Image (cartoon, rainbow, N blue to C red; front, side, top):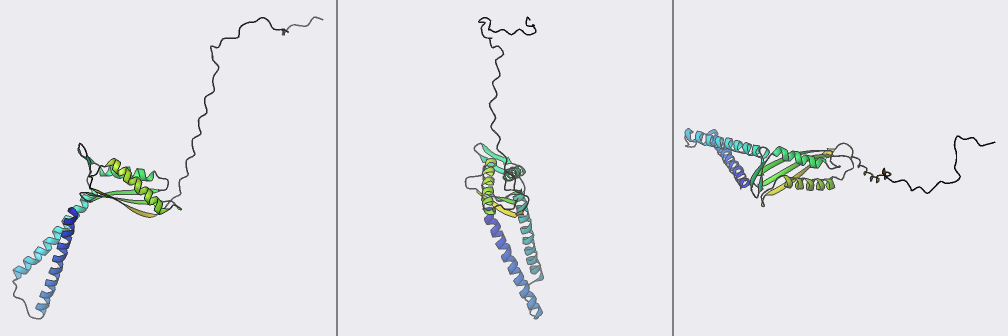
Length: 215
């Protein structure tokens, strides 16, 4: 609905400006030809002021709409009611999940709300040399969509879009982390309270240390 109103306002202002420009051109041509139309100056002043005010209102309306697109919390619709989620928190969460990918060197995310039921996630990213951009864009898009739905619950008929902007190659691909070695089982320590073997008598021959043999 809001998008339709904006489109109608743009068309209306465009038509009025076109008619005002044509009317002014015709009026000045008639004055130049000494065929001044029988129109009072007050009417012309009122008409010009009306066109000027219409353009001023248009600028103010679209400037306010642009601020609403980039500022303010996002509305998360839950079963218990509406929860306001910080836009900065959502952007930080999306940036973290995107930069966690090995193929993404740097990511900048902006969440826009052009309409009440339309959300646009614009992602500007850099990647190292040798990365397949199309495959990376698809992978990054899926990660951002999944993470956004975890943070914000939109209405069933709401529209969520992700706009990918590749800004160039930067940095080197991160090396894969080596797999952690499996821990070896601990060695069994001898039992401290193990009982000595039972005594079964002396064992021969018996070595007598420190005694001299008889000559």
